[in-house]
Image: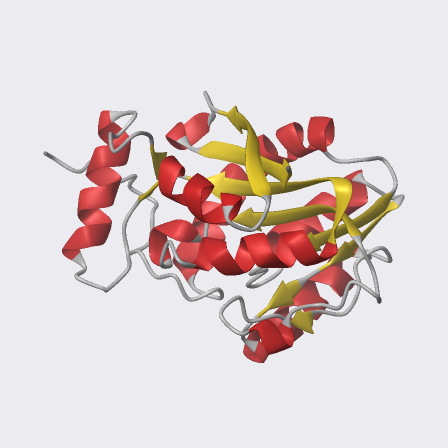
Length: 220
């Protein structure tokens, strides 16, 4: 299958501060914001997992002035970038980033400190193992309010099938890099892993640009 690559797209590089991540983030942020505008509460607390450079959380924050945003990442090297974007945007409702490694339970937040109305993850699974959903679901089970939501954005397969030719082509491009665990994951696999921790798929938002989905989970 031929792969059609936009002329302005940098080479795929999942490093949070790479030109590719910046390009992809700028392309999808307004679409995500529109959906989050319907999903997120007007007030409360929102936690972003795998914040990377902080581009999304700092873009969203001004649109939810009464919502407190908590960025996080496993890599402290990106914290300065998150803070710089916060300062540039003047976001008083974005907290200092915290270290959360989704593979290490010792780093997960304590529910005694705070519970969250929303947790969100953006563009992670195509360059991360499906097993990461186990950590995400456990964090959600631990610190998500009973009526809170977990939103996961990205490209996925459905019932083992690609939903569009463009997603199939994108997956083949990723797989060609021959990096272990890269590639589109199946919604069913995420759902199955999350269910083990009392987190269930409530809604699938599709018909989004770039043929991506927003998977909305919540406590059972």
